[in-house]
Length: 317
Image (tube, rainbow, N blue to C red; front, side):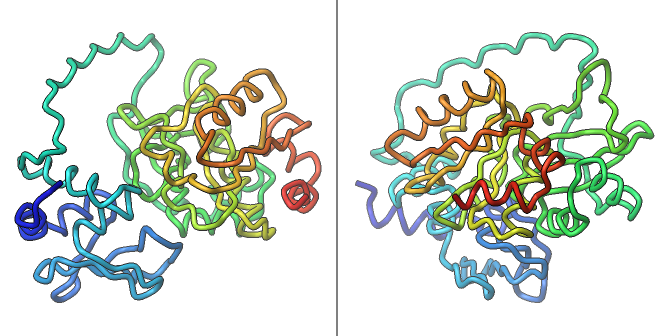
């Protein structure tokens, strides 16, 4: 058991602004730092962090607490696990701290040409009106969907080597996928690329699940399509995107699915069906998984073939 003295040391020694600032873009506002709340969707910052009192508070949704509560709520940890994690940052040894020497990391195999990695998540902008309209038309989505995704931090635009790209990501910014604005492959036959050195298995928006149902989609266009169905057409679920049918759900994201009903927009191919089964096995005992087959191919194909209104009905059944 972690002692009260250690808990107090964690609370007093952890810089709450630095801790939260790793996941939320904070800007100084008087005695506080402010940013967009990671616990609910908002466009105007109502999330405050006070370095002197060592607390955070959202005046929009009411979430509040100290560094331990932040770690517990944001990462879905128990009180003890949150303390151990924070103690590790400070170099404090606790009874729960693993004593086994860490395994050496395996060297990565060289990436094959013509893969050209983005070195880090690039700075994102809201795109031009033409770029937003082009993306909506390219994917058969409504302009309101594109605006909503940009406003909530799940979609942005960026430039690299004179080319413009659209990027899907989420608020924790540890995974993202890049595609060209003109719809052409990035290079060679590669349609999309996950940001290099990211948590590729992290499902976008998994830490933002706020409903009893989850609409799990695969790939960037399908993630935007899930946002349209949930936000514009009223499907009562939280949109989540896995960036690749071969990807498992990252172990640190699994707690966010606890006690949820996960509706998988299943691709109509062997890879899609295999992905559903993989996620079903991972979530066994945590959540109930239901496959919703996409007969036209994938979720975005289904929307382009039949319209979002008709596709939304599939998730109300």
